[in-house]
Length: 527
Image 1 (cartoon, one colour):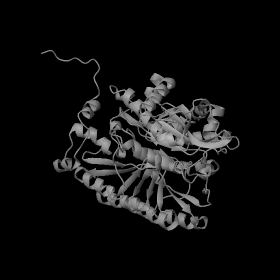
Image 2 (cartoon, rainbow, N blue to C red):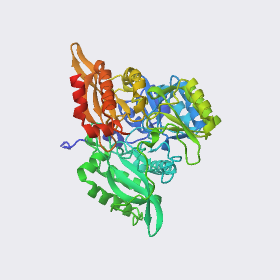
Image 3 (cartoon, rainbow, N blue to C red):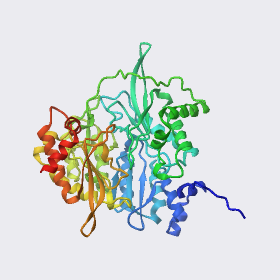
């Protein structure tokens, strides 16, 4: 019998998904083991295997980064019962439970469902958590509140079964103004609220970028439309998803992201396909603009989230809760929920720097709230600045990581906490990631460290590639690749060089633009 010959073989994941996507976690729990195929499919349900055999990670989706205090309290209870009493927050506002055993997975899912939470599409080749600026509804610079749009987009796209099987993950984020605090240039789809004047009237809508992403090959998102009427944004996000579904690479997973579709086809061709998708579903796109559109709203400051004592438009305070290393105890989270009820709006907001926030606080109550936060062992000051270091979980949990990112956090904290750096508190951001996947996006911060291995006398050793001067739309420049023992001195040299050469109110990234990365490298090599 003649065998069928295929000269392009789909990836193993594609073959598994093509056979069916439904899993029975009760049956898996009864068996106590997942097959290789089930392990692949489980990601679509927010379930990952972990570095330690037998442990699993469950990722809870959190559209817009907002949960009620009741939901947060249940999360703490579930963590206490099933996940060793700890929870980790991600740089895309989701929550992760680690060390969950296979026989507990169905129980965790059922407990979450009691308060409207789910792990569905927390991972896998599908729509991921739809993120938003953490101040979406409360920022004084916002064009309008984008939080409802992030939640509605999540609900809308997740209602379509024809979008369950994508080539790889599909990430959307919303920002309330051009400051881009939702990180619109490094996601598959970056949606930015704008206001324009047309026929003597102001109209609200969105500027939409596509094709951004980190990983081993980073891309800055490109503008797809300069203006989209607000009422059509969910339809557009679906049409872009269809572009990815139909044209993404299902043979080579290393190139199976939307960013490669945009890179390969070009933005013009991608726009043509998106418009065809809209037309095929009878969506009116007559109000979509391609020509430049001026945002007529007020200007925004550089790094608006770094304000020391932020207030919303109603004069109420926003109080950040620093989570060291992005992980906290169940009792700590339970206390944050209580504080949100006592002092705030009974909601807990998560940020893309792995922290939490309590909104709607009377300014006179801020000192007491900060004192109570610090009593829990969490931080109440220093957010969105030099001491707010963001590490991924590293080898603590992740099977892909090659470095102990939390150890590097511990090594750097004494340095960045020195009093001499107080004057640049809000001018330097530091991210640490344990591998090229960039779960802590190291290319877009003032100082970024990416875990790697360097050959030593007794084998390979932990090391880091250090980039400096990064922004979302202008990635960092190479400073050095160093063993862990040399990284602390290098970071101190970078900060001292910035202190010595800083002009006015510029950030470290501004200064690198001015001096060039070479000037920083020279200071290190000459030391």
